[in-house]
Length: 320
Image 1: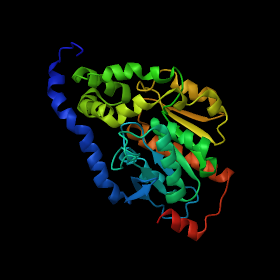
Image 2: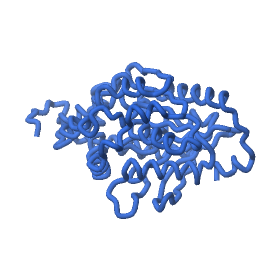
Image 3: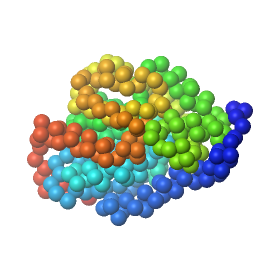
Image 4: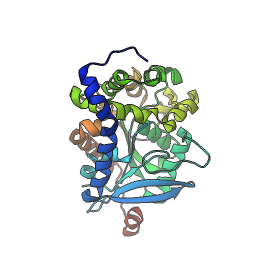
């Protein structure tokens, strides 16, 4: 234990903070159908994968696939996806082991390779045409891997506080792992401060235990333990990425290892970059309007630069 003596505020908020994050996610799952989302499950590479689809009401030549980060799930996009769906078919996937998706048979966690293969197969089997990938944290890491390995499936990627920068490899995560093991109320509030950039202290306190519990689950710990240096994104891999790339970054992110933003800005070929003030690791939760506008602008640029004609049959396949 840290030896920290809890103050009255900590003692008041700590019991409540276990329930706040699950409650918010539960409300989001309940609300998404009212916002036009269809909830579906598809077996991909032998794994039941849960996802949401919000079809655009108009012709939408460029679909968007939203990929969440480590410890998170598809409903993290519930404030952004309906806005983007005004012009694009939107898919929000629960990665294997997260949300309502299953795990690969016999595994306690999916590796980066597992998740890359499943997202690629999802693009092939469900979306059935090249898409814009929007990835937060680990989701950005996966988006780069998919674009690298299956560029024909990807029209562009938006990296939002993306993970996977090589930096010092696995050692880059050591300070975060130490903070979680074991995690008392004070440490949990530190994690919340690392993740959120603009939440007032009372709201951070209310989310602290729930946030820590997300990262303390076996699916996260096993993923971290199984990740090795070759899994991270090297400078050469980023430099050779064949896909148009944009970076949207919360300025106050303390969750990722220092230097992550500079790493992507330096090694990606001519990325578009926007830094969000008063925002942390989760722009989709803290700055949803600015996030949606950035995604829409980047998607429009891609659509104008590489126009495609979408047939009725292709659109039917997209929303089946």
